[in-house]
Length: 462
Image (cartoon, rainbow, N blue to C red; front, side, top):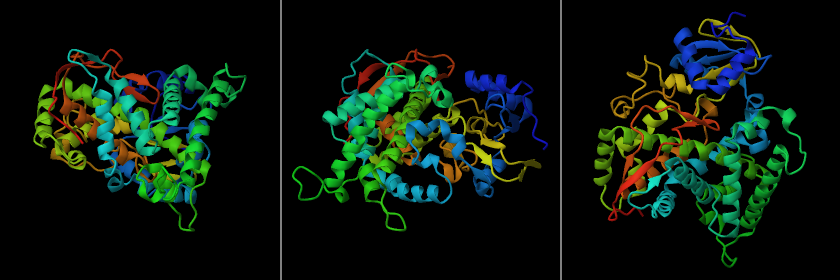
């Protein structure tokens, strides 16, 4: 089998390079080999892993070749976190069934009903910011994102269960960003329960507590009826969990408790840190480019003092700013890897079963043939040109695109608009940034802060 050229380092060193410095390693490979190159980055006995950033090839992977791949083995590291019945663990008919059940709950129009709540949660978090205060914006965005998941996705209301879940989920999400803690998910041999003080025992203990709270909420929700005092009928609720509980597949079957739990954990894992990271980048870039901040501020001010959240989410420049932030440093470096099931041809090469094909979001978004001055933050490019889903795909693509894409973008726009409508902020970071790894995402370094220069007390988002 002839493969595209790639690194000549031993597989173990390639694996260590992409784990330790993925951006630098991918940039170097693209500079040397172009849009397509072969690596061995899955350990000592790694199969060929071929990276693509050419839009034509990515289109083929997402569309005409989509039935030629399998996915379960590639996503095994997420299994302990999201569970066996998670959407990302499925393939074929089961994957299609689950997407059909999930999509209505995460459709743009369904999410519009949650716009006021997202704005309110944001205002509640930021209302204590004082003039002159130094704001650790990544931490603030992570807290807002978790609150959105608990109330918009899980449908919880503040109370004892809500607060306990908030603390437990926050602790778990923080723990899995640690390289030492997260290593155990990559290597099953490390998954040994040696008691609560051991890493795996600690994870299982956390998971058991979280699951008991989620299952209790599901059970309580199932018992709710219009006649139950203090309860609300499922059909009257708009949170994602309730909508999922009402959903039925073509056979009229609903999701079971475990399946619901696994989808909730999937939305949590893939939607929390990623959305917070995207927002942090948006704040970094617009405050590094005052002309962008000024243009965005003018667009927001034109909406008046009580703008409608849905109308806000449709503002052209706000949309362009969020997309450009996701382009320069996407929340995921790659789309879901595809493992070849049977021999296929692409770009004049033939790939045998076991080969892994990777649409590389990071490199596709920085491809000079697609984006002029790709290293520069230029939101205007999204106003001047419409990019295809094979040129701009921050949430992956094809039938494996992120199910929470619409929620993440909607949340990003509303949170960014709410903060900027309430405060004028200044950055302490006026130099080129070196991205810092945080779990599966890359964020501005922890030294990045915004300070409050003025509070716009007259602005209200309802």
